[in-house]
Length: 198
Image (cartoon, rainbow, N blue to C red; front, side, top):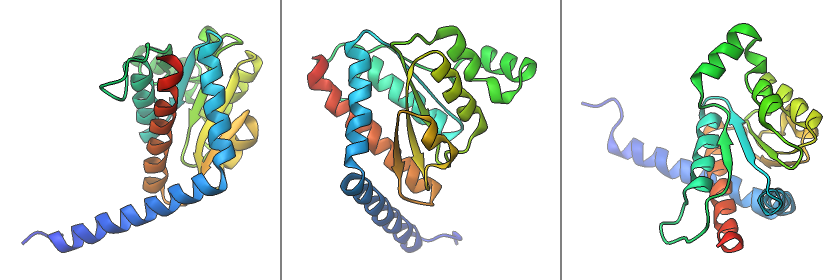
């Protein structure tokens, strides 16, 4: 006998759908201006010849890589959109481990930003808590490089919210739900980018 039966699994799925739907509805109805403004910054970055650099920790690192993949390749298999220049700062293990070892874990993204980011670029920071210290340091590094910054956050936005040009904050205290709505936001941005760059 499995410790979790199909009925409990179905209840878990239904609870997740309900909670995610509630968080997404609140975000879109209460914070659509922030959602759209962040998208405009992404769009303007590419229109002005800039490059998007995305970073996060753990699941948020995976979200950053996911978004970059959709930008470079495409989300919709029928899309004719051109590839957009984007890089995930969590993918080069040699840089990450050298920076963590030599400079400290707080500098793993900031060091790359100092090396790569130009004033017309954009840095996207993804965090469910908004309090990851290496992202706070990365936001400051981006500011010093005169680059734009946006963030996908959760809870109340944390310490990162006031450090970026625009923050999209998912109104939830549940990490799973925040991550699920972050994915929705990233997919919305991809959908909105398609007609602009096709």
